[in-house]
Amino acid sequence: MRRNEVVDPNIQIVAEACKEDEELRKIVQAIARMNREQREEFKQKVNEYFFNRVSPEDVEAWKFYKYILEGDRARTIVSILEEEKDGA
Image (tube, rainbow, N blue to C red):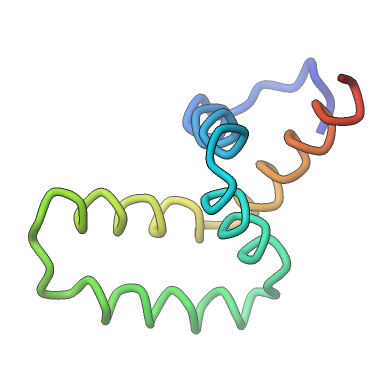
């Protein structure tokens, strides 16, 4: 990922949050290491886990996982973090 590329603002928000929260960073890194099949399996487990959960915290967590599991978003975030770490 080059610094001048247009990045989904949500990806940048998650990357910033990962800088502040080590547990969140570990989750994103673990998802980034998954292949497509593993991500699909994990996505199914996430959906099953959050199916009947309605608390605001659970809904936000589900939205986060739903977002981060799409395409290569997790890998993009890890790339941003690595670039900024190397550039610092």
